[in-house]
Length: 72
Image (cartoon, rainbow, N blue to C red; front, side, top):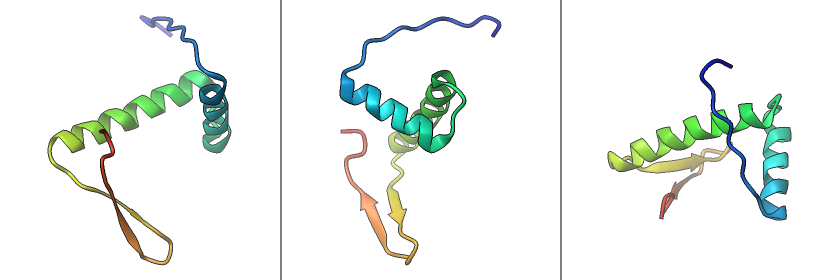
């Protein structure tokens, strides 16, 4: 990858297990792919939150739950 930077980080065992679980769930081909996707999603949600957007989760039955304090 041209003009890329390498980042190394230490994770607790629990965080590393979470990372592995997410990689499996998303079928990401690498940790890098997973992190790029996660950063894009985090940036979008944070930007929307700053603009005052409100987030909901809708179940398959149509029940909606407001997500409170997503970034606090």
